[in-house]
Length: 234
Length: 255
Image (tube, rainbow over all chains, first blue to last red):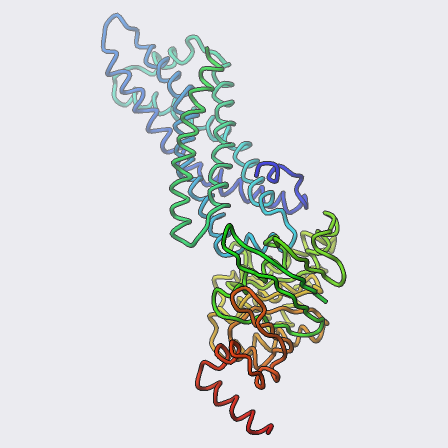
């Protein structure tokens, strides 16, 4: 399957049009949910950390430090990717699966079009290119959400939080997070595409394939996350 | 001309096509008929290369499709037009985009040339002023006409239609039948239609291939179909009282 997907597109202009469409469908339309969830989860992480580090011996700046690490290392790349696997994965499987059961993929093949390349490659490129931006935005909003939660609740001051953010800042952790995101983006595009492309039956089969694709993408993200963490951070 | 020799196709242990021999001539509407499960769709999909035959050959104007190079196969694909049973229009694209798609993909025409060609084929299928509509906004008959327009936009040498009348009312079905026949005669296309609509068989069947249990049980034209004593054909075609009476009247008239 991947060999067919990564062949050179038959017509550059059509590929470019598809790519723009997929960036909009898979990327821009996910911006809202990622921004919303990141902001509130960032706030919750900061509040939970503040409530659980209730000791005079622990500096308040540790709250900012812990929130930063949690958001950059795990929440933004992994948690957001799992959310995207649900939202985007089910969309990819159902759209390709519907094309399969309504013979639209057969129509492409009869015309002499490499349907895997035409349907899947723009999705892979769109997710791999766009999701790092999405995740970085998630990081920023999560951290901002944490700051705002602290300021509004009075559990810690903005100054302490910002001090924590600046403490022991390692740019490699951002790189690590982006590497993970690239791998997860690839999984989010390919696993649901596979489930949609090879679906057999009717609308119920497409529904089942959508559910299966989300489950499998999530499982693969979690397993890959473990191995990537071990490879890159130990 | 399409020549089919000893065509076999199965899926696992289930044999669907069991040694079909026939040919389809250019400029004629060739019909494949038979009961559900007789192997009509598998036969059609094998002809257009969506299924690989297990045994036997299919030649297109003397060119064996099993011996095509990648370049020849690409060329051959562009000589084929296909109307699918459910129309198979790309539902995210407008009528114009659907029809323009093969032109964009395989030609170097300018936008204006492509648009002219799209309007020409839309005019040919009597579907003017529908360019900006989405397939979901069209009736079943209109969708079929868009599918025909898309199938003929590249000037195909071979046109394949999988049950083009399914789900249509009798009046629209006749319009679609006549349209396919007109296009076939006008452009001298080799047209192969898979159907079990007996009206189509009687109206446009210039050559009819009757399949039963994956084998060719009979072939001939619609006139010969009236006269045939082939038991399988008589049982299938004249199972309705209406057609039985039509046949009797025809036979009495020609006595």
